[in-house]
Length: 383
Image (tube, rainbow, N blue to C red; front, top):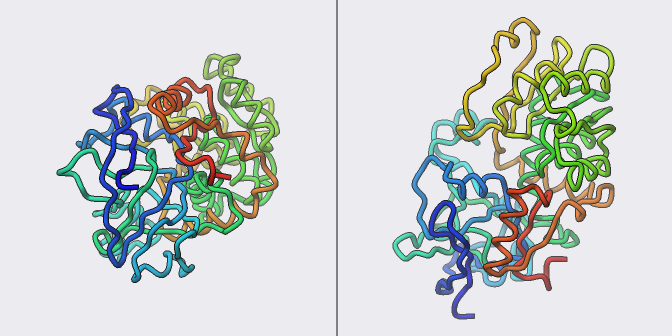
């Protein structure tokens, strides 16, 4: 293969165009891997809506929930970040954002190294002067060079993990870390009752993470009933609150409290990204409970409800953004152990790697017709 096909966008709102880029040479500490599958993330949708705060190298190839198989590897790239052997044929995933390991935050605050001052974004191929670029996972192949970008991390997936499941490792790890942070401050105990706001992919995976880490009860607040809320119940949510049925904050709060009983939930996690979720979710908590914010990472608007309730309810607000390098391996192992206990395949809707297929995947994600839209450049290796 002399050229590699990539799905590109000329800017926010543009339709996808399949272009070709030259196949790069693979130096001593680099690898080229065949993309088996790559998910459509909420971040991708924000970028296509023009919400990304920094300039991007358009025409741009999106996609970071990627899993593939090494096709070519340099002689000095022998192990992944965890010390697992790398070779041609190995299944791998690469996170989109990794700390550099050298800046002040990385050296002095390793548990919050996700706030690295000089992070490696995507970290694949720096051909910005020759657009389009071999960068994101909506492509036939991807390139990674650890000499060019030492902060980049590679993780070998278990040999018996299908690549479609491997695409969930990065978003699942974000969920695991959020609950883990609540555990570390003593606010997520075995048997805790939790409420999750937002029934998208992160919300569904948060159900799995919560149950695997000891939650006693999980209640989901979201929409629509099909395919999302019905799937949440399959994943173990005890009950679901349909925001299309309970249309006001007061109705949703009352429905959650009636379902939970007692004084309210022990923890509420926002995976929705809606600016009204915080004040609403706080009222679903018992006094002394914990609110975990995962959905707010772009400028989604102003909070219109008074935040003095944070004080009067004596609760903890826990922000959780992304993950550190060590968290990824925890996520991979947990996902692998849980692979037969949850219908992970049912949350993915597959789309072919064509211009129409990429456009359909983005539309399905935007319109919530799919829980997790996944673009599959190589269906022959994805399972």
